[in-house]
Image (cartoon, rainbow, N blue to C red; front, side):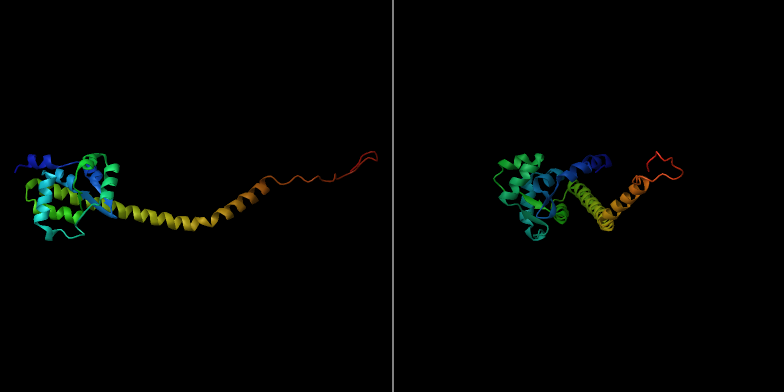
Amino acid sequence: MTKALNKSFLIPDEIMINKILLIREKKVMIDKDIAELYGVTTKRLNEQVKRNKKRFPDDFMFQLTENEKEKVVANCDHLKNLKYSPNLPYAFTEHGAVMLASVLNSDRAIEANIQIVRVFTRIREMLLTNKDILLKLEQLERKVTGHDENIQMIFGALRKLLNPPQVPRRRIGFRRPDEND
């Protein structure tokens, strides 16, 4: 296969990232989206999964419940057609997507699989980076939390120094008898 044809398989990472959903606290892709990326029908993809059931344990793939399907359809515009499907879709984790490439033995499946794995890896790296930033912010917040009262006290003292209260003073010096204090 030529390189020009391989390049046509590439899908922008942003599109792939939008196809990755969080269901049951796992990052997954729906069977319809993976089938589209691999260039096969959803029916063909699910047939291959059923033929190779041993390759897809529960941590690689699971079937959505009716409630989960409704939530996915409501939240994802590109999956609106699932609303009319009588079948419950399957969700594949990163490992399930890798296993699909071995079941669907085509060049396009292999190319799409490589891209999917790279996107999942990039998401994992972004989450780790964001987690580090979040931890640093929490540490900073803990350090600064008790300082609000102290800072207010310092500003109060500075205001008193800058604007001392005006106390009437007794005049110093010689006074005539007709003058009061």
